[in-house]
Image (cartoon, rainbow, N blue to C red):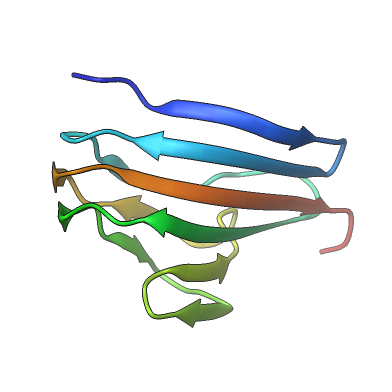
Length: 101
């Protein structure tokens, strides 16, 4: 199976921006991302949707636009991506680890 390609575009102490390419056949199991202290926010923008599969699901979101843009708290809400059946999924992921709760 092909590997996920995760390109770091910016990596600061509390802010990261990554360009992530998920290949055909890949899926992301249901999970959350505990951070210990503070709050964790993630803005995911789907740049290329797979032809089939690769659907993002979460227990909660702060903002969602047409299955292309989602702002959510990965530390609080479980999330997953269904198996990519055809094509690939390319995602711009902007993550903020804020010091406040």
